[in-house]
Length: 149
Image 1 (cartoon, rainbow, N blue to C red):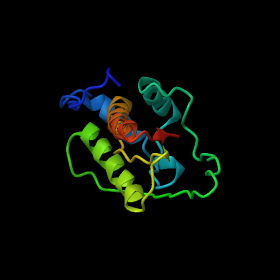
Image 2 (spheres, one colour):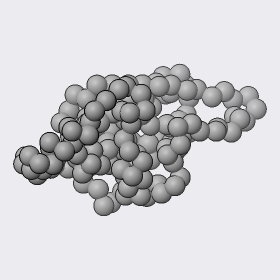
Image 3 (cartoon, rainbow, N blue to C red):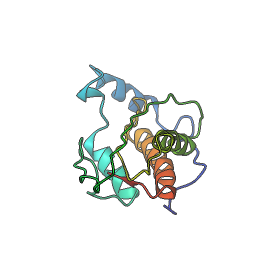
């Protein structure tokens, strides 16, 4: 989308004072790897709105139509570690990497589910990172005519 920067800058150091940082960690209590590690729904909803997705996505599962006769569904899941500092570029690279698995099987990408990991941080930082990662991924998906579910 046009409103998002292609080369975003992270919030400047010191953007959140020590009181805010301390409050974050005081409420962090238990950070397990399950539901307690998920980005809050308010952040996710704001990110989806910024990306123009509104209520179109956000579920934990998707229902796919059966493929046309003579066709099969190719599914893949990928997870790669952050290796660039630019979250937009990372999202674009990660989506392209996942799309390449479908192409390698001779398939044509049609739809995609997103799994994004962001570090525990204050809401504005989490929202910024998630927005940029998904914006980069969406750019790659749009170029492949692939829908984010």
